[in-house]
Length: 329
Image (cartoon, rainbow, N blue to C red; front, side, top):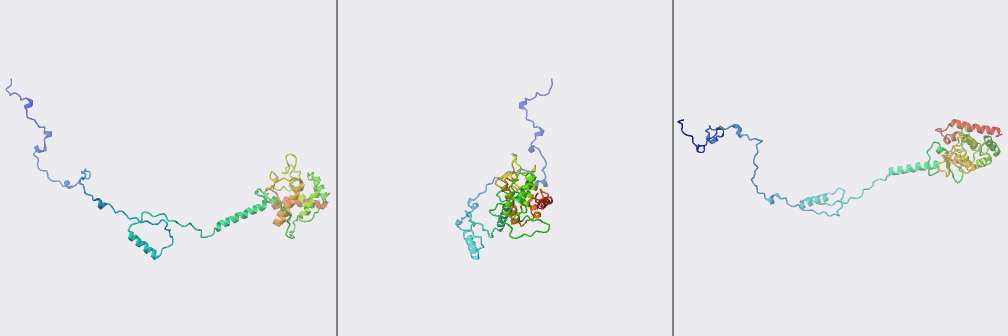
């Protein structure tokens, strides 16, 4: 057995303090010296919000109500510079009112005026009208034709024959189509018969119409032979599928003619086709352009864009010379 005294019950034992939980008050620490960093404020420290209430006087903070200047709605806007009296009046009005108008109705402006006459627009209209009249004169129809050679062979149909204003000079080496007939109706029929032309028997029409328009029919016949082989060329555009023809002795472009077959005019008889060729040369070339020789007519009648002009001129002059020399025997 031990001689040590018996232990006290746990509940009667005095409470022990752990050394890790010793309060600062229980410790006798030396007094802390002030540190210079204590005066420096921490920028990241959270400061308590200032809850001090300030007295706000509503009357001191509320701006005075602006005075409204009513401007009459019917006041016109004058763009002209104001005189001295008008400027002084406006300044005085601003000082008396002491406020900027909050509402000003939209002023009524005068419509824009055109100071000058529209010469540019007038020039464009005149130029357009001139071009329109030129094309109308060339085609003699509401429908315009721009195909190669179309303007050259587009005939005109006036009520009466237009001839040259006076005798036209003939340049050396050129051959004029003007003059009385140098071939008879019988001679023309013999030439047509030699070619096997479907127009055989129309010699009298060639002579009578040539005398009426002042053109030697020998040249009309030469154009007919060169253009279509007197109506017998296999590739002639005047041949129709049913075996008939357009009676177009000069391959005149349609250009708005009432009846056409493809690009070319379609006549009801040989007399109509012959007369239209005479009319074309007399009105469009002799009367309109002042040209009357084979050398002047063919470059316009059959342009080089689709024809051999020198060969055309040479063929017409050669045929005319042969027929005149032989009398078309």
